[in-house]
Length: 360
Ligand SMILES: Nc1ncnc2c1ncn2[C@@H]1O[C@H](COP(=O)(O)OP(=O)(O)OP(=O)(O)O)[C@@H](O)[C@H]1O
Ligand SMILES: [Mg+2]
Image (cartoon, rainbow, N blue to C red; front, side, top):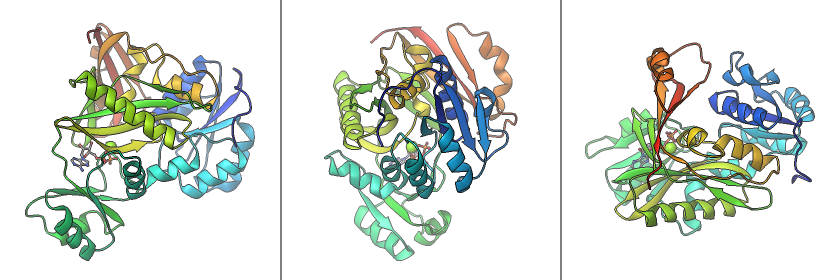
């Protein structure tokens, strides 16, 4: 199903998933005059606090899904692990963006790599692994070091393990729970970057400037814009993003993670949703990634991706949230908290965007 005409303010957007991304989508939607209805299984979902309506139900509660679909004008999601039968059902009942087909490609690391490589875009060497014997053969072909990842359901580095010179195949295979997996050659990269891109129903594409991303303990810690890469590499990264988003006939915002290795770009993965490495757009751009996603799925013209400042986004993890007063007192700093009660170790509690005058 495609959108017949742009949705007017006052329409209702259904959001699947109630975490911080759903919350910030709802806040941006509210600014454009939309109402949001969040569907999530957890009673204390951060997005509920800022939305007009919510449904607490499981992702396989088809009666609840049907009722939800009837109440909204378009459905979107904030996480890529929406079960595929649930996405297909929603798509049969309502307008879903991004489509279940795009979601399916992103959910399986092997399908995703085959798709990207099929566009002529470099990815890490890879092999499917379904047993310890497969792992042995894959290492013989790809070499060490390598990274073993579950095909599905990984996030924040969970479900993956490095295969170093001396790692035993049995230990690595057990480590990822003997689940269907992918072995990837280890890319010795200079930098990790990402591209936040958006595409509307009519095929118009908008792409933001490129951030450079730093992880700590496998969790994104900072995104810095501009990235310390050449203008040519940044433009190439943006072009790669345009190619991927167009080939998927995608509607909405997508985050595409890449490695810069020498002068070469290698795509790691894409997320069919707004992305943590795009949070800086909230304070450094005219239109944030969240508003852009809402504009895209509601059939509005895409907004300007112009960046007016240099910016560093810092994720606030776990106990760092106790420093809220210090963040609040910082000059030229956009403060964003997600309304989560419990500051568990490594949990994403909020982020700040620290602005400096634009250079480059
Ligand atoms: N083939 C590789 N070579 C080198 N480093 C890698 C490779 N694959 C992953 N990494 C490192 O591990 C990190 C997490 O990997 P990946 O993005 O594939 O997993 P994820 O669980 O989806 O993580 P996230 O939720 O942070 O995106 C990457 O950002 C990168 O630093
Ligand atoms: Mg990643």
